[in-house]
Image (cartoon, rainbow, N blue to C red; front, side, top):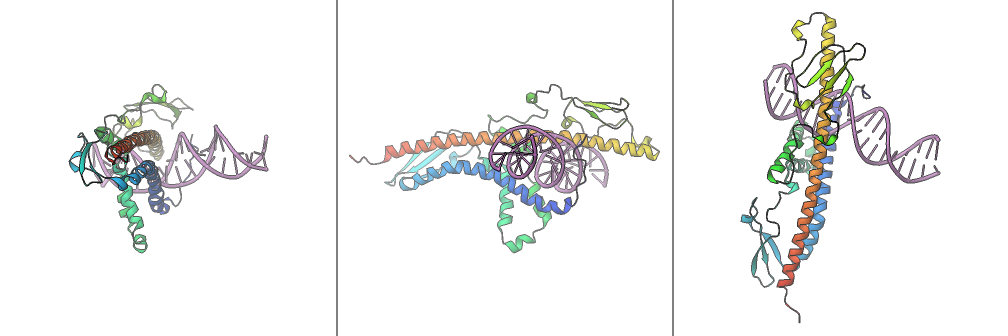
Length: 282
DNA sequence: GACGTTCCTCGTCACGGAAA
DNA sequence: TTTCCGTGACGAGGAACGTC
């Protein structure tokens, strides 16, 4: 059944280190790639801007749903209000909650080295643990931006496996949950999962209540059964989590694409304004 | 074909937060 | 307080690829 039926050693000792290093590295890499992606274009814009005109975005126009108003300062000192091409600016990817978390973590890391060594690991874990789930992040984004689909509670049909039915061996005993049917069939007991375990309500009713168990053997069986159930649920949860993560990454990538288009349009708009405002040489 | 490397997927564990 | 859920981390296995 499991190809990883091993015990994890020294996990707790290593964890504090890996939590803050690997995770922040991962997050940084995401941030980095996204930021890099758009900053490349931003820089091309910034290079051309200072020589000719100062561009600033008016504070009143940056709110969601209201058109962005760009103040372009002309060489003559004259300021022109320009309504941007992008009517409803999308919230930046960099503003998403998990990025803020990374920023905090980064600050903590780049602080005074001696001080950072004595930073309480609990506090750092706290900082990192504030990272919301992918579902929350994406749903927040989707509430801001209509184009972004929400992550469904139920597993989507994209996986092609019609009803989510899995069959696998499980310790002997018959029990049934609200979403999964378990059947014991002698040597090869199987169960069927008809819905993702995320849909399982908390406190799933077990067939044999602990109070009815007396002998150590029964207790051991119950413990084994609970463990198998937990493993099965966690397995499904991990799958679901990975699916959401993929969806989240896809969402970020699509937003990068959108922002790149926006950036390109803004650069073109700026070029047009430059052409309009630049003094004729002939 | 053998091998090494890289990348991806999966199951499991550990942990924190939310819910009961 | 206990239980459950969501997710990062870890290691194993396998596929894909390049090199010899």
